[in-house]
Image 1 (cartoon, rainbow, N blue to C red):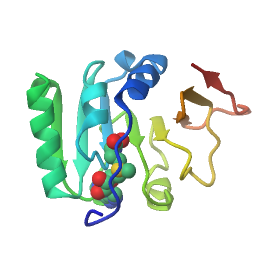
Image 2: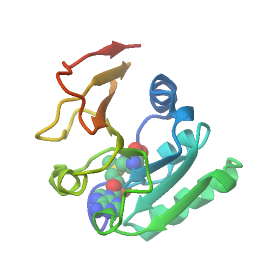
Image 3: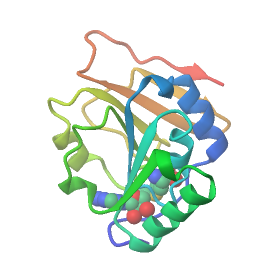
Image 4: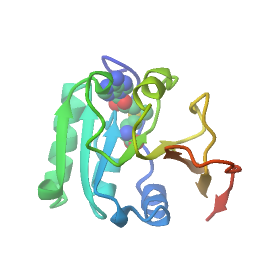
Length: 159
Ligand SMILES: C[S@@+](CC[C@H](N)C(=O)[O-])C[C@H]1O[C@@H](n2cnc3c(N)ncnc32)[C@H](O)[C@@H]1O
């Protein structure tokens, strides 16, 4: 457990497939909301600039060390904070592997432009439908776009 949640790590092979599929290189700035040991930030940093926000100081320090060890320090930044208290408008890609319901995040995103990536099937936004769901082995990534496109049906992508 961490001060604000529970830590589990996403699979890097799945993340690389997913980030390639969403054409992450076309985006400006990625943020992982609750970055744990930084695995998703490091994968995203291969495509664009990437920031990790993590409530747990030791995980945040580990994430920073991992990025440095991978030669990705110049494309990454880490912040030990509660993402619910931060402005998310500088980012055009939000990624989260949620360890709890997304209610607080849903309230923060009104008026925001960009894409939200939700790893895993455990928690999903209550009021939005994904425009795509990517799959790799047992892993999934759901893609939400903001502002929400009109009349978009749920689609599914398989790998
Ligand atoms: C399931 S782990 C995901 C780790 C990483 N994002 C990944 O994909 O491998 C969730 C992380 O979110 C962090 N977390 C939960 N709520 C948070 C909050 N409000 N602000 C910052 N970090 C938070 C937890 O400490 C935990 O490390």
